Amino acid sequence: MVNERMYKLGSEPSAIRELFAYGMARKAEIGDENVFDFSIGNPSVPAPDAVKQAVLDLMEEPPTELHGYTPASGDPRVRATVADHIRRCYGVDATPGNVYLTAGAAAGLAISIAAISQPGDDVIVISPYFPEYKVFIESAGCTCVEVPAHVPDFQLDIEALDAAIGRKTSAVIINSPNNPVGAVYSRDNLEALAALLERKEAELGRKLYVISDEPYREITYGAEVPYVPCVYPRTIVCYSYSKSLSLPGERIGYLYVSDLMDDASEVSAAVAGAGRALGFICAPALFQRVIERCIDEPSDVEAYAANCTLLTEGLGALGYEFVEPQGAFYLWVRALEPDAQAFSDRAKAHELLLVPSDSFGVPGWVRVSYCIPRETIERSMPAFKQLMEEYR
Image (cartoon, rainbow, N blue to C red; front, side, top):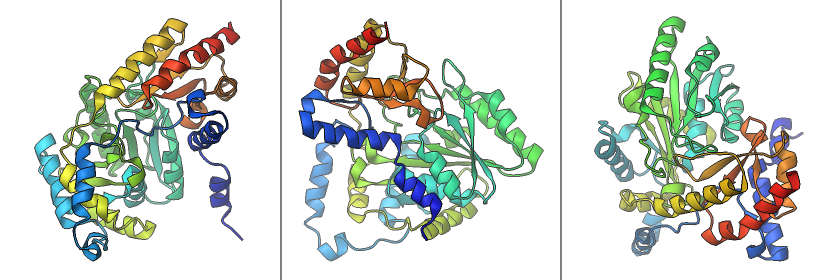
């Protein structure tokens, strides 16, 4: 007999990927130019030329060496490069032994949750949140506790977190810049979180961790993105090059156990054990080496900023309500009726593929991904206008 929980996960795919798959089929039917696919965070900005050159150069190396296994936690040279990058960029005395190379941030998140939680623990997420957090948490035998963000700025609601943290809490997952809203947590907000967690640790007599999910760190529009370990030492950073270098399909990233936490060696050992138990060992070897060479390549934020301006000005002129993004490449738009799924379905009739907010843990909104060709946004405006007129 199959595992019933896994059967349910496999037979009910995520709303994002289901809409993305629908879009691919629809484009095959009526042409790419006639479908306005805002469903998935698949960067339209190409990877830097340095990435291509790194791949070409590396392909000249002996194949058995290039494509062979690395140690479970990653190539020691690449781990040292990542640690050096952290030291240079954030002023943290990072050591290679606390860097674990992963198949993207998703693997890092699953490993982190398993490493610092016991079955039966609570792991807190800030809603709206990336839906897979709940999958990873429940797969570790833990309970996903949703704490709404503060509205209308979508910062961390410290009072709500205070009420939610209890004797079963092991960690809080934060994501800044945020998917799906585009909010960036301010330094003051993070310092308030740190003060709360330190007080709660003393009250509860247990360690409380922050898992900082950071695939959008470089994609900001002027907002400061504080480095969380510098604010709260007991932090694990999960990073991915999917967005910063436009490499989502290559599944390469890292997990960093902050050297500033007092139990870093213990947590790193648990991370190695969780990676082993989950099968997340030896991240893609070729792209480990690519990252070693391209780690300081800048992100092309200008293209996303231009798309953001085009979309917000267009939707604003049509009367749509949305949250002005500070980072990432998503626009959080108020649905034109309380039922976000019904609104998303009506949008599909206009070939607009918008992700309903229900899967992000809140009602009444849609996520609009603008990491797409500029021309798609321009062509979509008549469809957005027709959709608005339907509701008027």
